[in-house]
Length: 396
Image (cartoon, rainbow, N blue to C red; front, side, top):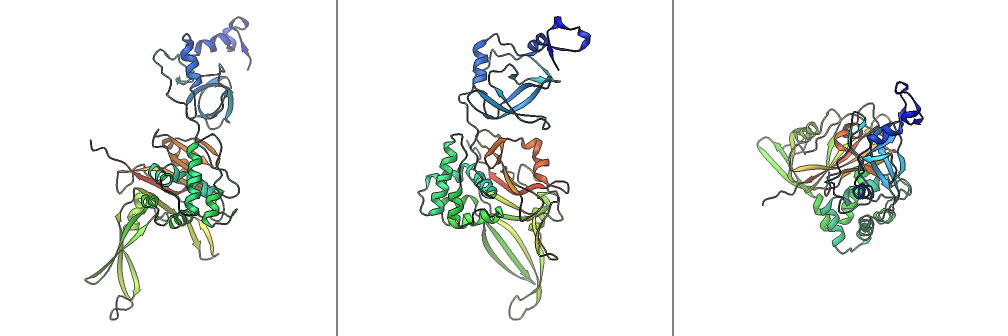
């Protein structure tokens, strides 16, 4: 649609005039504030962008010194690059698709303009490792222990190198191939991310960082009036999704008493039925929940993916001190293939981000978690790992 001056058309023709568009823009009387605002627009900032004849809400997902890449709130419109000084961008304040003037008299620029977080390069079926490493790096306690503890073996050296690259955040993607090599995994081979997580924790052995994800489970066996208990360490809580619709239901099923038949209790009581119950004895500071969506098909002897819907809350059901900080989703309808990507919250800003190998962009957990993570029969993308972190309570 052409842009016309008011003098070039009648009001009844419905043309968009330059004067009316300029009148809709925020006041730029204070040139210093306008220039400062534009200079400090950065990754994650929300803007109003004039596109397809109207002002639309968009978020900055990448930037250079002179250009901004914006992603529109309306997912049907493709991302676009736009000049930082363009008159087609303005401070966000949109109501009913009309831009309202913004009072800049009290606006203060942020202290810094952070770069978008660094992604990890996929050099061939490395999405499982990239998603896992981002989850671990963005948990401050785990990251600090990796970076501050002198490495003693190949896997520790590789993790330090990778985390240092992510911490430097120079705007380039990091190659984590050294971590893959140190773990002994075959290059180019897709892996189950939960099994790789357990492998890394095993390779780290007694490293202090492993303590962040280490908890204990108490198993109790009962027969007649007798009872036996044992304590087992865990790094990941595996939960079923078949037959349940929520994390709460899955946890209840995990903790329920089960009957075990044909069990040899002792020399006198053989082939008897006993009961077994498991409870979490010690919770780790980082609780990793594995949603068991891959199951063996006994007819084909292939591993199938379970796509059923499973909802999960921001606060962990068994302890509300634990807050959801990360989700790894599996995309695809086959267990032996597909793609992993991660959604992660930055503790320092409370902002959520999507990490898809080298691509990093803002993500709204409240708006998108159901569609992107819960799964269901009509979706091939669903949560596979959940990361809950214990909040540090203020006792002052």
